[in-house]
Length: 285
Length: 308
Image (cartoon, rainbow over all chains, first blue to last red; front, side, top):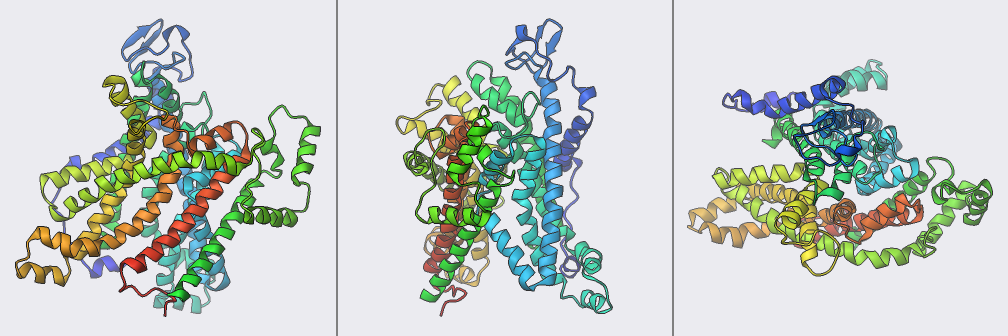
């Protein structure tokens, strides 16, 4: 938008490469997730009942547990590596799904006005007035757990966030002279929305999306922690924390290590989100 | 003022109706809600009998009106497993969740507001930079992980606090911190931005030029004006705390609504889940309403939409 140009942001002092560490962490996790089968030293589901709850560094039979083993003697490092896949797949898919649905509905509401606007924005209000985690829990309770259902549930729960921002942004963009001219010259609503409105609001939407991404990672882990997410034996950081909780007193590594991965990844995503917002939204500086 | 109040109440009622409708539809996402209520071993005859008993074989609009009618009488149905009214179960667990939420709110405000002040007033001090890092970390910390870490450090390693269950106040300390830290970040951010907004205003400069000292300025002038957004956020945060309690209660085996919800899901006792979610939604709508009203009470300058 032209806002940034009209209100120039003073250039920041050049900053060192180390400032990019959050992006580096995210890139690292993405790479680990993609290459998980080649990086993981063992099959994440292979059990070794003689090597249960061994501390990091233990060698048991053919296993060398760099990060220790869990209650079934599975290699924690391999499970943490494979768990990154679940976190990222669920977060990516749910952000894209809820983002596309929410942005489209928000744009239509902001452009069409009238009863469409009232209907969509009322529904948004209703969704936002139920605490997201509760709405997710009741929906999973109905649909049943599993990775696809978790993605659907998160998309269903989170689209109103995008709808609200897309709506308010569309309201201002749709009144710009060139957008009105385009409609006047016979462009249909889909063309106006996707050619003229969407490029203008995509910045604001992507700020929401980045912050939502971190939240979705936490939601997936939370649902899996409650036993409502990805089902065993699939490795998910949340589910690993949940079983690890039972062994806090005897085997600290089972719960703490997946939790640490979760924390570092979400921290990196949130820092990146803040940086994206600072870049795209001059009001926030 | 009464005009605004009525309008706002009307809006809240419409939202509640919407919430109830949404839950009604969620319940039927898979087609037949009877399957949510029977154990996996039930025979077709059992299912048909229960379907008829609960009225799920009637036309949808009839079921919907019936559902509304029951809710209007505060009837949340009966637990299929325990054969007890859901309201009874909720009433017996609610005090624990409220206690936990209160503890978390104290933690969130007690740490968040001072940190927000620090961040706004001593912006460039090393203490403020450390505090900013702390806020960011708290925001990215899953409550179930911070809870487990606390158990590990304070119960297992140091033995200072009991790891779970209820008893005296010491049992409440760790759950309150685990739950409160996330909201703490929100409070710190809001306090900071509210104070920064106020600091840039003319009256602050005038007061400073008259020689009013910083401490006095903060207490006499800034605190009052900056408290408005903080109070509104507090009302909204309470509903977040109640929802977050679901996970924290599971970590610490705290016998509140969250624990009962998770147990109900695992036992396929859908009526309890639905009751808790409805309660959570109602409380959220009410708190939103309250937050709007507080807004106008704390700051008489604010003329609300619809007010005369």
